[in-house]
Image (cartoon, rainbow, N blue to C red; front, top):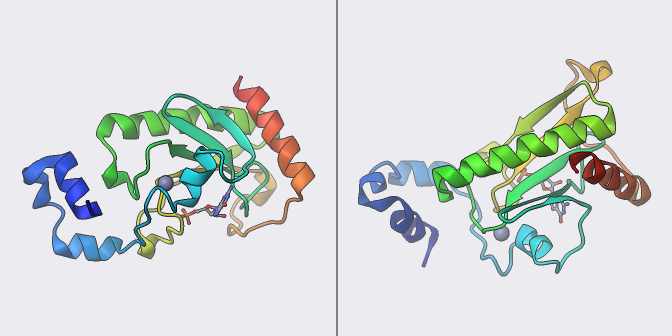
Length: 169
Ligand code: 5GP
Ligand code: ZN
């Protein structure tokens, strides 16, 4: 079953009209099967990650190429490419998990603010075709500065993850 068929099955024929050909073209994301999906591999434990949170439906781990120390990705365990592949209660659960994770991230890093970012489709710079919410802590000294990737070594990543995990509880 392809993504369009899955969406049709999930949302029914009424919503099929919403998912017009033009909208599908705008999304234009690289579809990946769960088997080949990098985040599914992390969720299945086939790839390593600095995990900070894990519940029945959602998981969070540090971004490998972060915008700031403590930059975390929150994902549903079920594979889906964009927000439109999720049911509304699953979307609610995802953002509830992101809010929970944000408190741990803020506490562990001492950040003064955080950004929530969620990309859908190639045009938005979505690179990994598995829905995820970025939780990006921001220090006051970085207020107003453009976001750029930073380098954080493996030991610091592991220690940050441990602190965030403890802070989430
Ligand atoms: P997107 O642009 O799709 O919203 O964000 C994908 C994010 O996933 C990027 O910030 C990127 O650094 C991160 N990422 C890509 N591959 C991996 C990986 O294998 N492990 C982890 N932890 N993060 C990844
Ligand atoms: Zn996946």
